[in-house]
Length: 487
Ligand code: URQ
Ligand code: ZN
Ligand code: ZN
Image (cartoon, rainbow, N blue to C red):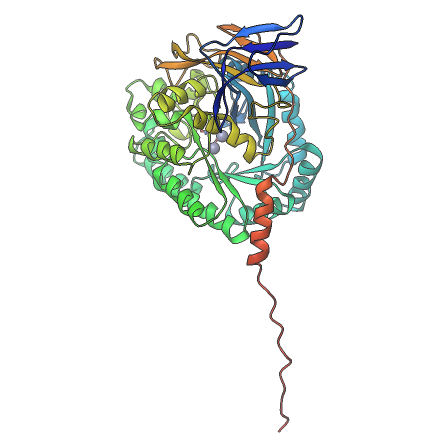
């Protein structure tokens, strides 16, 4: 398959420039003015459009077994919907139940993901600790291309881990050259508040937000940062939703600590008023953790992205349909947590980010693709428009308008948290491995075409960390043996 993208403006994390792009055999073969189309090539007219690296979503949960049910989006439908929105790769999560082998769980998730229509990779969650976990982390990094390990500081009684596990696991990951990520909410505080709210007779979705106030995220973010600092380990905090956590990350980064922050498209534009919706199902459809926040937190998150204090954007795409959400009809703690967004992230961020002047087109590319590729060490294979990079590209129509709706989206869920949102900026065409998978409303996703992407350990920033830790290493003090003057 050879595709010539003609007449577009290439936008990278660094710059924008007019150039044609020639793709063949799954990679970018040439970039330059007035390229000629080889015989048999498909030519895409990109006049008036931007040619950007395909979006990378570093946080999804396709077909996740969770809270007594399974997320409704599977690896095929979810990656197909991603392609329709200009996202060409997802990094999903292997989440072993406590006590279950990480390696066996990884093989299970690999099996599920074989149906994917676009490239994918996996963070692996450390949900318990033992010598076996330590050993399997090594095998996963050495033999399976895993370079990131997730830790849930929430979900007490299920997948939550304590500080002892954080210390052991962060230390092990540091040895292996792998990055640790955290879901930063104080799970003990959430559990305590859940009990108090239920005792007070608050059972509706509003209880979910009340049980997870911003302080619960702020405390956990600070604690995870402190644990990482003690060990000299880098840290990545997923779905940062509050001013408190944003400030914690900014303080850590200002001190020279290597901490990265991720923001969900949903948390940037939806606020906690959704939980006061008189319609129970609509309120419950917004139950996710961390919950949607009072509006002022959005300003902090946008400022974090504009200033570079927060680096990546994601969706935490974890979908549950109305009957599933209704499992918590009488008790908000039993509403499966999760919302979707993988198809709409790019449009929402372009409209509210670039359209509002908060982001330049290059900054948009940085936070939707390039930063994620660099942090998870798959750059420039991914997240770049460069000769030799994978031909994962989006032809972005900055003038294209659409109204987001569950009635028209390709996601396998009966609700869209951005329902009714009118956005300007849309994917006109999406190339995955150099093949046109989406073009002007025509979805040509191929089940099983997606590849598992190995992510090597020791990203470039680990070398810097190694030097910094060596400098900080405590030196043994050699003392002369005490001399005792015998009386
Ligand atoms: O916590 C997560 O990231 C997973 C379980 C998805 N659910 C959610 O509410 N964010
Ligand atoms: Zn989470
Ligand atoms: Zn998640």
